[in-house]
Length: 319
Image (cartoon, rainbow, N blue to C red; front, top):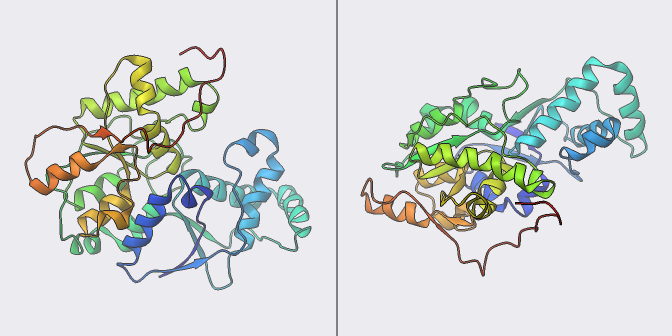
């Protein structure tokens, strides 16, 4: 299988563990990834609110740069996945927008003809292309005694037309079950993590995160599994702020789903980026290695001396 890889800006920085673990587990299979040369940021959500034509052009340029011979593009970021799909669909259905976008792209010497590429998310590749039967055959260290809450976020399966149900997705649930994990009934799994809201209105962001963490804790989840860099950052990096704001004591590690696949495949945790998370997964993984179910379900926050610096609330943004 050959795919063009759109890596996403965060894969080289805040979500480095996502990129590391994805590569480690994809190397297990006969998958060839082709780089997209000179790719650019998809614009996230900000550009869409400011200038739709520029927003579509940013994603269309990435699609235009896909090397010849690749008919499928994959990305591990839910927002990038949505933006690439949206640009392709909008241009396909609106000839006027297609013409305007390509007029902009012509300034850089590229052109994109919509409809010619299939845009995929990494979870889709594992679930539908590789398949659970093949994945199960590679499991050498099942995630026994680990309770996992799968968090899809609000962009991976919406709008309709993707690879899973828009309101009640199950692909990650079934993937994690195939790894031997106990998947909890996580009702908040398709809710919003707040996206960039922690930089705009902390009270709103922390309330969104509190609801997700509360549900995961109520399910006695040891770990929250995510498929998006922003979801991981918000649930992990702001967990202590949520605790300070609401006098709670959440301490639930948040890992990318390829990290859990890699653990089940017996890959060295360091090669999967385990340890880069802020709320440490080590207590959960230690218990797993010891095989003692029911012993403590929470992780511990990593030494603050090594934690990433977080932006402070805006002046006057009362907590």
